Image 1 (spheres, rainbow, N blue to C red):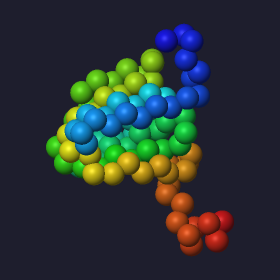
Image 2: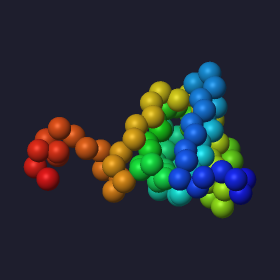
Image 3: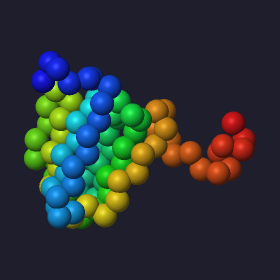
Image 4: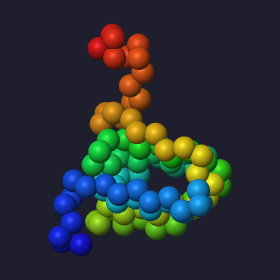
Amino acid sequence: MGDINLREQKIVLDDRERLNITGVESVDSFNEHTINLSTVKGGLSIKGEDLNISNLNLDEGIVKISGLINSLTYTSKEGAPKSFMGKIFK
């Protein structure tokens, strides 16, 4: 993996049940409905049902998640979603 740019991120979702993500820096929080990650591209929130982190390797920046995936949402690098009103009142 030494040839891969550490600032790259790849997200692969198979059948809404298996999610592989590279470029992960940390797992901020998780439960069976929500997993919040810090990635090289900002925060990432995964929502679904029966979510499980089946493989975690932070040395390589890889996370594998299983369960029913309903949504993937990027947040700002600070971790908070940027709403319309939040952008106006910086």
